[in-house]
Amino acid sequence: MWSRPHLLGIEGLDASEVGYLLDRAASFLGPMPKTDALHGRVIVNLFFESSTRTRTSFEIAGKKLGADVINVSPSTSSVSKGETLLDTIRNVEAMHADILVLRHASSGAPQFLAKHARSSIVNAGDGTHEHPTQALLDVLTMRKRLGDLKGCIVAICGDILHSRVARSNALLLGLLGANVRLTGPRTMLPREAARLGPTVTIMPTLSDAVEGADVVMMLRIQNERFSGAALPTTREYTKTFGLNTAMLGRAKPNALVMHPGPINRGVEITSAIADGGQSVILDQVAAGVAVRMAVLEAVGRTRGAA
Ligand code: CP
Image (cartoon, rainbow, N blue to C red; front, top):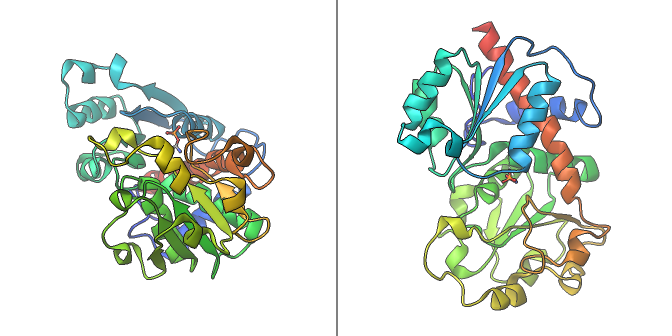
Protein backbone atom coordinates (compact mmCIF):
# COMPACT_ATOMS: atom_id res chain seq x y z
CA MET A 1 0.00 0.00 0.00
CA TRP A 2 0.99 3.64 0.07
CA SER A 3 1.61 5.70 3.21
CA ARG A 4 3.91 8.52 2.06
CA PRO A 5 2.76 12.15 2.10
CA HIS A 6 5.01 13.01 -0.90
CA LEU A 7 6.32 11.49 -4.12
CA LEU A 8 9.82 12.91 -4.43
CA GLY A 9 11.53 10.26 -6.55
CA ILE A 10 11.78 6.59 -7.42
CA GLU A 11 14.86 6.27 -5.21
CA GLY A 12 13.79 4.94 -1.83
CA LEU A 13 10.51 3.39 -3.02
CA ASP A 14 10.13 -0.34 -2.55
CA ALA A 15 8.59 -2.90 -4.89
CA SER A 16 5.25 -2.97 -3.04
CA GLU A 17 4.85 0.83 -3.23
CA VAL A 18 5.69 0.82 -6.95
CA GLY A 19 3.36 -2.15 -7.48
CA TYR A 20 0.55 -0.33 -5.71
CA LEU A 21 0.92 2.81 -7.87
CA LEU A 22 1.21 0.83 -11.12
CA ASP A 23 -1.80 -1.38 -10.38
CA ARG A 24 -3.87 1.61 -9.35
CA ALA A 25 -2.77 3.51 -12.48
CA ALA A 26 -3.66 0.50 -14.65
CA SER A 27 -7.21 0.73 -13.27
CA PHE A 28 -7.36 4.35 -14.47
CA LEU A 29 -6.25 3.63 -18.08
CA GLY A 30 -8.73 4.55 -20.80
CA PRO A 31 -11.47 7.16 -20.71
CA MET A 32 -12.31 7.53 -17.03
CA PRO A 33 -15.40 9.22 -15.65
CA LYS A 34 -14.82 11.87 -12.98
CA THR A 35 -14.63 10.64 -9.40
CA ASP A 36 -14.80 12.60 -6.16
CA ALA A 37 -11.73 11.00 -4.51
CA LEU A 38 -10.12 14.42 -4.05
CA HIS A 39 -13.30 16.51 -3.88
CA GLY A 40 -12.66 19.68 -1.89
CA ARG A 41 -8.87 19.40 -2.22
CA VAL A 42 -6.73 22.05 -3.90
CA ILE A 43 -3.85 21.04 -6.17
CA VAL A 44 -1.40 23.72 -7.29
CA ASN A 45 0.77 23.04 -10.33
CA LEU A 46 3.99 25.04 -9.95
CA PHE A 47 6.00 24.60 -13.12
CA PHE A 48 9.21 26.61 -13.10
CA GLU A 49 10.24 24.95 -16.39
CA SER A 50 8.30 24.47 -19.60
CA SER A 51 6.05 21.46 -19.96
CA THR A 52 3.29 20.24 -22.25
CA ARG A 53 2.66 16.61 -21.25
CA THR A 54 3.37 16.63 -17.52
CA ARG A 55 1.56 19.83 -16.60
CA THR A 56 -1.49 19.08 -18.75
CA SER A 57 -1.79 15.50 -17.52
CA PHE A 58 -1.45 16.51 -13.85
CA GLU A 59 -4.22 19.05 -14.45
CA ILE A 60 -6.47 16.49 -16.15
CA ALA A 61 -5.68 13.91 -13.46
CA GLY A 62 -6.51 16.30 -10.61
CA LYS A 63 -9.78 17.33 -12.25
CA LYS A 64 -10.74 13.69 -12.93
CA LEU A 65 -10.34 13.09 -9.19
CA GLY A 66 -12.65 16.01 -8.41
CA ALA A 67 -9.97 18.38 -7.06
CA ASP A 68 -9.70 22.09 -7.76
CA VAL A 69 -6.53 22.56 -9.83
CA ILE A 70 -4.64 25.86 -10.10
CA ASN A 71 -1.70 26.47 -12.44
CA VAL A 72 1.02 28.92 -11.44
CA SER A 73 3.66 29.86 -13.97
CA PRO A 74 6.79 31.75 -12.90
CA SER A 75 6.64 34.30 -15.72
CA THR A 76 3.25 35.60 -14.53
CA SER A 77 3.81 35.05 -10.79
CA SER A 78 5.77 37.07 -8.24
CA VAL A 79 8.75 34.76 -8.78
CA SER A 80 9.53 37.14 -11.67
CA LYS A 81 9.84 39.92 -9.03
CA GLY A 82 12.40 37.96 -7.03
CA GLU A 83 10.22 36.01 -4.57
CA THR A 84 11.95 32.83 -3.38
CA LEU A 85 10.65 29.31 -3.95
CA LEU A 86 10.05 28.84 -0.23
CA ASP A 87 8.14 32.12 0.11
CA THR A 88 6.08 31.19 -2.95
CA ILE A 89 5.17 27.85 -1.40
CA ARG A 90 4.35 29.41 2.00
CA ASN A 91 1.99 31.87 0.32
CA VAL A 92 0.31 29.15 -1.73
CA GLU A 93 -0.07 27.03 1.42
CA ALA A 94 -1.63 30.00 3.24
CA MET A 95 -4.43 29.65 0.67
CA HIS A 96 -4.92 26.04 1.86
CA ALA A 97 -3.31 24.16 -0.99
CA ASP A 98 -3.26 20.44 -0.26
CA ILE A 99 -0.93 19.12 -2.96
CA LEU A 100 1.87 21.01 -4.74
CA VAL A 101 3.10 19.57 -8.03
CA LEU A 102 6.55 21.01 -8.64
CA ARG A 103 8.80 21.13 -11.68
CA HIS A 104 12.06 22.96 -11.11
CA ALA A 105 15.44 23.33 -12.83
CA SER A 106 17.30 22.72 -9.55
CA SER A 107 17.97 19.09 -8.65
CA GLY A 108 16.69 18.53 -5.11
CA ALA A 109 14.11 21.36 -5.07
CA PRO A 110 11.17 19.04 -4.20
CA GLN A 111 13.19 17.31 -1.46
CA PHE A 112 14.06 20.71 0.01
CA LEU A 113 10.44 21.86 -0.05
CA ALA A 114 9.17 18.63 1.48
CA LYS A 115 11.21 19.47 4.60
CA HIS A 116 9.37 22.78 4.99
CA ALA A 117 5.94 22.21 3.47
CA ARG A 118 2.69 21.35 5.22
CA SER A 119 1.23 20.18 1.92
CA SER A 120 2.10 17.09 -0.14
CA ILE A 121 4.87 17.62 -2.68
CA VAL A 122 4.86 15.71 -5.96
CA ASN A 123 8.02 15.89 -8.06
CA ALA A 124 7.18 16.66 -11.71
CA GLY A 125 10.87 16.75 -12.68
CA ASP A 126 13.81 18.33 -10.82
CA GLY A 127 16.90 19.31 -12.78
CA THR A 128 18.91 16.29 -13.84
CA HIS A 129 17.80 14.31 -10.79
CA GLU A 130 14.42 12.54 -11.09
CA HIS A 131 11.13 12.50 -12.99
CA PRO A 132 9.31 9.77 -11.06
CA THR A 133 5.89 9.99 -12.70
CA GLN A 134 7.54 9.77 -16.15
CA ALA A 135 9.27 6.54 -15.17
CA LEU A 136 6.02 5.15 -13.75
CA LEU A 137 4.12 5.95 -16.94
CA ASP A 138 6.91 4.47 -19.05
CA VAL A 139 6.83 1.25 -17.05
CA LEU A 140 3.02 1.14 -17.13
CA THR A 141 3.20 1.39 -20.95
CA MET A 142 5.82 -1.39 -21.11
CA ARG A 143 3.90 -3.66 -18.73
CA LYS A 144 0.71 -3.27 -20.76
CA ARG A 145 2.49 -4.53 -23.90
CA LEU A 146 5.09 -6.93 -22.47
CA GLY A 147 3.65 -8.14 -19.16
CA ASP A 148 6.19 -8.86 -16.42
CA LEU A 149 9.38 -6.88 -17.11
CA LYS A 150 11.72 -9.25 -15.22
CA GLY A 151 14.58 -10.11 -17.59
CA CYS A 152 13.43 -7.70 -20.33
CA ILE A 153 16.12 -5.64 -22.04
CA VAL A 154 15.48 -1.89 -22.12
CA ALA A 155 17.92 0.28 -24.10
CA ILE A 156 17.90 3.95 -23.06
CA CYS A 157 19.79 5.99 -25.62
CA GLY A 158 21.05 9.56 -25.92
CA ASP A 159 21.83 12.27 -23.39
CA ILE A 160 21.84 10.07 -20.29
CA LEU A 161 23.95 12.36 -18.12
CA HIS A 162 21.49 15.26 -18.13
CA SER A 163 18.33 13.14 -18.19
CA ARG A 164 16.14 12.82 -15.09
CA VAL A 165 13.98 10.47 -17.19
CA ALA A 166 16.91 8.07 -17.71
CA ARG A 167 17.79 8.13 -14.02
CA SER A 168 14.25 7.48 -12.74
CA ASN A 169 13.71 4.78 -15.38
CA ALA A 170 16.98 3.01 -14.56
CA LEU A 171 16.05 2.95 -10.86
CA LEU A 172 12.49 1.77 -11.47
CA LEU A 173 13.31 -0.81 -14.13
CA GLY A 174 16.06 -2.20 -11.89
CA LEU A 175 13.54 -2.56 -9.06
CA LEU A 176 11.33 -4.59 -11.41
CA GLY A 177 14.17 -6.86 -12.55
CA ALA A 178 14.63 -5.50 -16.08
CA ASN A 179 18.09 -5.21 -17.64
CA VAL A 180 18.87 -1.61 -18.52
CA ARG A 181 21.41 -0.66 -21.16
CA LEU A 182 22.48 2.97 -21.35
CA THR A 183 24.26 4.45 -24.34
CA GLY A 184 25.14 7.86 -25.71
CA PRO A 185 28.09 10.07 -26.54
CA ARG A 186 30.87 9.75 -23.96
CA THR A 187 30.28 13.34 -22.85
CA MET A 188 26.66 12.44 -22.07
CA LEU A 189 27.16 9.29 -20.01
CA PRO A 190 27.42 9.05 -16.21
CA ARG A 191 30.78 7.84 -14.91
CA GLU A 192 29.30 5.11 -12.75
CA ALA A 193 26.32 3.21 -14.11
CA ALA A 194 26.51 0.89 -11.10
CA ARG A 195 25.18 3.68 -8.90
CA LEU A 196 21.91 3.38 -10.82
CA GLY A 197 21.58 -0.29 -9.89
CA PRO A 198 23.05 -3.74 -10.46
CA THR A 199 21.04 -4.38 -13.64
CA VAL A 200 22.33 -1.25 -15.40
CA THR A 201 25.13 -1.48 -17.99
CA ILE A 202 26.74 1.18 -20.15
CA MET A 203 27.12 0.13 -23.80
CA PRO A 204 29.69 1.72 -26.10
CA THR A 205 27.52 2.05 -29.22
CA LEU A 206 23.87 2.43 -30.12
CA SER A 207 24.04 -0.84 -32.02
CA ASP A 208 25.34 -2.69 -28.91
CA ALA A 209 22.53 -1.22 -26.81
CA VAL A 210 19.73 -1.94 -29.30
CA GLU A 211 20.83 -5.51 -30.21
CA GLY A 212 18.08 -7.90 -29.04
CA ALA A 213 16.33 -5.22 -26.93
CA ASP A 214 12.64 -5.49 -26.01
CA VAL A 215 12.34 -1.72 -25.66
CA VAL A 216 14.30 1.11 -27.25
CA MET A 217 13.83 4.43 -25.46
CA MET A 218 15.29 7.47 -27.20
CA LEU A 219 16.06 10.71 -25.38
CA ARG A 220 16.31 14.33 -26.47
CA ILE A 221 19.59 16.19 -25.99
CA GLN A 222 18.96 18.39 -22.94
CA ASN A 223 20.59 21.52 -24.38
CA GLU A 224 19.14 23.63 -21.56
CA ARG A 225 21.18 21.72 -18.94
CA PHE A 226 24.71 22.37 -20.13
CA SER A 227 26.73 25.11 -21.76
CA GLY A 228 29.49 24.69 -24.31
CA ALA A 229 29.83 22.00 -26.93
CA ALA A 230 29.16 18.47 -25.67
CA LEU A 231 28.84 17.27 -29.28
CA PRO A 232 30.78 17.88 -32.48
CA THR A 233 27.62 18.57 -34.56
CA THR A 234 23.96 17.57 -34.49
CA ARG A 235 24.49 15.84 -37.82
CA GLU A 236 27.30 13.73 -36.35
CA TYR A 237 25.10 12.91 -33.34
CA THR A 238 22.26 11.74 -35.58
CA LYS A 239 24.65 9.59 -37.59
CA THR A 240 26.04 7.93 -34.44
CA PHE A 241 23.14 7.92 -31.97
CA GLY A 242 20.00 8.55 -34.05
CA LEU A 243 17.46 5.72 -34.32
CA ASN A 244 16.59 4.80 -37.91
CA THR A 245 14.88 1.79 -39.45
CA ALA A 246 18.08 -0.18 -40.03
CA MET A 247 19.19 0.32 -36.42
CA LEU A 248 15.77 -0.61 -35.03
CA GLY A 249 16.01 -3.84 -37.04
CA ARG A 250 18.72 -5.00 -34.60
CA ALA A 251 16.22 -5.01 -31.71
CA LYS A 252 13.75 -7.86 -31.13
CA PRO A 253 10.98 -8.05 -33.74
CA ASN A 254 8.15 -5.76 -32.57
CA ALA A 255 10.37 -4.12 -29.95
CA LEU A 256 8.67 -1.09 -28.45
CA VAL A 257 9.96 2.36 -29.37
CA MET A 258 9.54 4.95 -26.64
CA HIS A 259 10.38 8.62 -26.14
CA PRO A 260 9.33 10.82 -23.21
CA GLY A 261 8.97 13.85 -25.52
CA PRO A 262 9.41 16.45 -26.72
CA ILE A 263 10.83 14.77 -29.83
CA ASN A 264 13.43 16.37 -32.04
CA ARG A 265 12.37 14.69 -35.27
CA GLY A 266 15.26 13.79 -37.53
CA VAL A 267 17.79 14.22 -34.69
CA GLU A 268 17.49 11.34 -32.17
CA ILE A 269 14.68 9.55 -34.05
CA THR A 270 13.33 9.54 -37.59
CA SER A 271 9.70 10.49 -38.18
CA ALA A 272 9.14 7.09 -39.83
CA ILE A 273 9.92 5.40 -36.51
CA ALA A 274 8.30 7.96 -34.22
CA ASP A 275 5.03 7.60 -36.16
CA GLY A 276 5.51 3.91 -37.06
CA GLY A 277 3.86 0.71 -35.89
CA GLN A 278 6.38 -0.02 -33.13
CA SER A 279 6.09 3.42 -31.56
CA VAL A 280 4.15 3.64 -28.27
CA ILE A 281 5.00 7.30 -27.73
CA LEU A 282 1.38 8.45 -27.57
CA ASP A 283 0.49 5.45 -25.35
CA GLN A 284 3.08 6.87 -22.92
CA VAL A 285 1.26 10.20 -22.95
CA ALA A 286 -2.09 8.49 -22.31
CA ALA A 287 -0.57 6.49 -19.44
CA GLY A 288 0.59 9.78 -17.94
CA VAL A 289 -2.93 10.77 -16.93
CA ALA A 290 -3.53 7.37 -15.29
CA VAL A 291 -0.24 7.44 -13.37
CA ARG A 292 -0.78 10.98 -12.17
CA MET A 293 -4.30 10.10 -11.00
CA ALA A 294 -2.83 7.21 -9.00
CA VAL A 295 -0.11 9.40 -7.48
CA LEU A 296 -2.39 12.33 -6.61
CA GLU A 297 -4.96 9.97 -5.09
CA ALA A 298 -2.26 8.16 -3.07
CA VAL A 299 -0.63 11.26 -1.56
CA GLY A 300 -4.05 12.90 -1.14
CA ARG A 301 -5.33 9.92 0.85
CA THR A 302 -2.23 9.87 3.07
CA ARG A 303 -2.63 13.56 3.76
CA GLY A 304 -6.33 13.13 4.46
CA ALA A 305 -5.56 10.37 6.96
CA ALA A 306 -2.91 12.47 8.77
N1 CP B 1 8.04 14.09 -20.76
C1 CP B 1 7.89 15.33 -20.28
O1 CP B 1 8.24 15.61 -19.12
O2 CP B 1 7.31 16.20 -21.15
P1 CP B 1 6.97 17.72 -20.81
O3 CP B 1 8.29 18.43 -20.60
O4 CP B 1 6.21 18.25 -21.99
O5 CP B 1 6.16 17.74 -19.55
